[in-house]
Image (tube, rainbow, N blue to C red; front, side, top):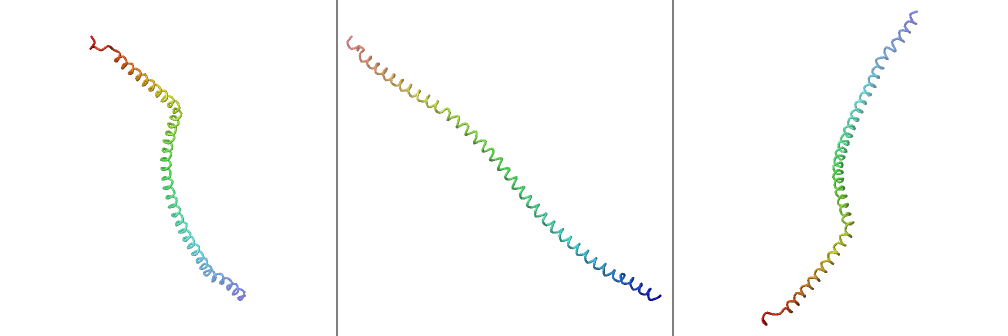
Length: 134
């Protein structure tokens, strides 16, 4: 009777004796997991900081490019206005050239008329009786 009980007692003691070792193994595994989690957390935080810095730099670059874009758009609008003005001038150019040509012809005609009148005046003065014969 006592040997089966002793056998049972021995079986009960084995798990009890193994339990501290298992607890120690579980504790070591838990420590490894915790340590690994801390390390991974630090890696993730470092990666997040790097990405945040990259994002900040990209935002600054984006703001800079937005400013340049606004400047270039304003410049392009000024150039479009200048081009429209030049195109308008070009459309009027033939009309202005004709007007200039007409004015040049009128000036020549007036100069010829003046020359003819001046010559006539000289002829009239030479034909006028002089006061010495009176």
